[in-house]
Image (cartoon, rainbow, N blue to C red; front, side, top):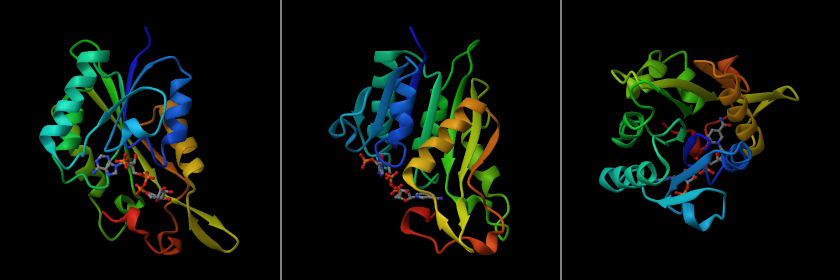
Length: 189
Ligand SMILES: NC(=O)c1ccc[n+]([C@@H]2O[C@H](COP(=O)([O-])OP(=O)(O)OC[C@H]3O[C@@H](n4cnc5c(N)ncnc54)[C@H](OP(=O)(O)O)[C@@H]3O)[C@@H](O)[C@H]2O)c1
């Protein structure tokens, strides 16, 4: 039986990642508001991560059905929620740590606002079974300017980060910061 892989927000820009991870033979759980509507491989749990009780219930249902979470990949628009911590608490177990890949917008790399990566990492503080990995979504320098990453680039880059298993990965670049394209809605903190 393969590992239990749980993806939060896997129906959008991370859909390609989900497809690739499904090929690895693990047991996939997908959590998002309309996870069941996307026909992606894996068990779907529909829940809004702003609703802490619903999100916790979905996590618990995923663990009850597929076992402890060995690998989690999560994209939350904000970390100022209960949900990221609830997830971190369910990653790994005593004697068998799991990994949580936290996908983050480029804003965490803003040199004018140091400490954002550390703030984000706090979701796993005091949880020895949860090994946190951070993946920052940057931008691409191209044709003398810069642009945001495509969904395919995001899925491929996060997948590479999972495979490489480094504590911190950057998809694209976050420097020079002054070249960062104007922030789209999805890049808001
Ligand atoms: N640095 C970069 O280049 C960068 C960074 C971030 C985003 N982007 C771009 O911006 C686009 C839009 O980003 P996005 O994050 O809005 O879209 P997205 O990744 O396409 O969708 C967000 C994901 O989170 C889920 N989700 C959203 N709100 C939720 C909630 N309240 N509870 C549970 N799940 C929730 C969505 O599924 P449900 O709808 O089923 O809930 C979906 O799976 C992306 O397609 C990407 O190309 C680029």
